[in-house]
Image (cartoon, rainbow, N blue to C red; front, side, top):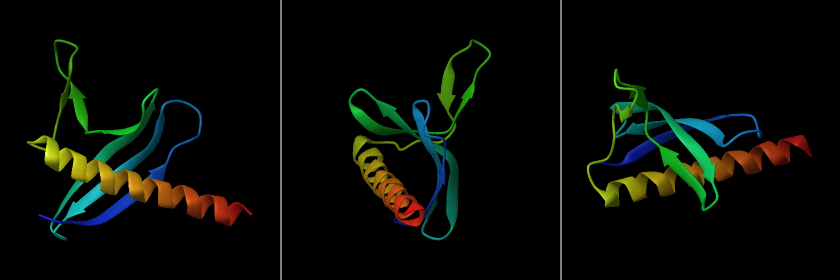
Length: 92
């Protein structure tokens, strides 16, 4: 399965959430609302989730293994960085 498109929607610079992303796989399946979040250790992705009746958040969709999560995170963060560069260039 290949990531064929990443759409980055910028969020304000304030706060930990930096962007919301949609990822398309094989031009056939899309996952919306993946969040780019900044932590003390750097940027990471959070999969779309829903709050359950017990107050816990549970992922709606997520990778099954660490390799797939890492691959997704690398592609998403690369697209986020590119979007930041384009935004900076447009402001100049």
